[in-house]
Image (cartoon, rainbow, N blue to C red):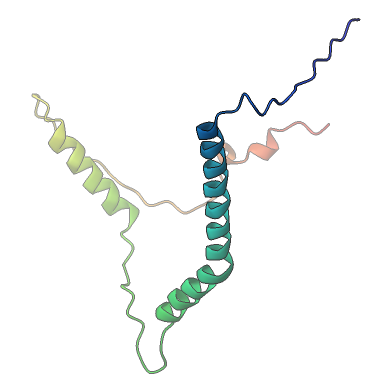
Length: 121
């Protein structure tokens, strides 16, 4: 097995003055950007977060001003979805689109019991 190791010789005469300026400027900009990001995260971000938390905190004596939304039952959602579907897909044949929506309790169903079908090894 032949390994050939080549040594890199840095010839300072081959480096142009403008190339060295670009390299030094680029490295300086990168390190300054890293320093600015570090200072922002270390010192400024906690002040911003604490300001946002204090602003969202409910003051004593004031009611909670969040909007409360009422949940719409599933059968109402199904009827609305069916009406939108029928509106967008108007079919030439006029059929009675009467459906029956029946509420069921969350009783035991063998279809949802996948652990009974698993083999115990």
